[in-house]
Length: 297
Image (cartoon, rainbow, N blue to C red; front, side):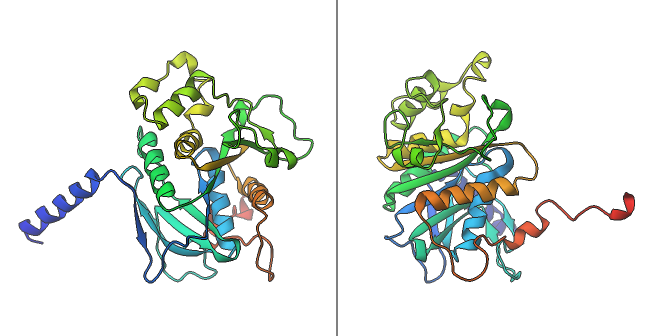
């Protein structure tokens, strides 16, 4: 490679990093459908339950990939075919957009974390993009740290929590009818949630909401990615619903199945008539490595 070519590549890379907006790159001969007005978005958190749930939904609803999102605030990554049923060498990238035509539903899959300290920029970019393509309802999927859970009640299985933009206090009648509880730690009048709202509306800057270490526990929920996404999407006038569950780090496949069931009930989704309701993605076969060698026991 010549020195001139090397300099050209470096300049192109620097230009890409200077970009501040999110861009959509469509698959060949594909485009975003206007009738898919609801968007599923996983928010990265403990156990990656939101991402696992997005995987299940893409795999089980015959969703097709329509393109990619390119954003300067998300770390790049690349992997092999995630869904199968047989590996065909189709590369998976950082941010992918899928659509299920039968459910008029779009699904965003995020495969790598946001650059440290850039969550607000990413949330703003995503909110601008989502509002710009005409989405009406965004459902954010996230997990919460089990250690922060108070008044634990597992008598009826995994308890679902939610936060909604339907009402100012975060409540939603549809969620309540499904037996879910509003996340009590969401209080729009509380300091950190109020600052997030002001930031999303452009009234303050990110430096204004840096918290003291003494407030770390109080600030836990408002500091999570789902909170930033919720605030920025809500500020765009979109209907936003966060579906949340508590979990611990480890094998979180069962949590993903339960969260997927919750999304299915909430949005009244249909599934292909053949086969099982939830189709395990190809990539999950090596999700937690091979089973232990029985000879060691």
